[in-house]
Image (tube, rainbow, N blue to C red; front, side):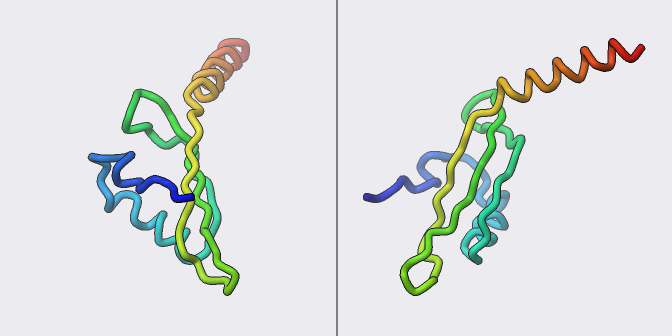
Length: 88
């Protein structure tokens, strides 16, 4: 089955911003970017890039997975504030 073209999903996103990340993935690197601003909402994303490799070891595509970590980031910020308050 086929995936979706990221350009349709992220219409309006500056492609130049993401090009280095796609190039890393097309070079065969698997990696995750954390705390990426979600362009579709006020949230924060974790974005994982996974090269798709054929049986000859050639990268033929890239799968991009996103996970909304907005609540996690908010909780981390609250914990930092509480910790700082306790240290005073």
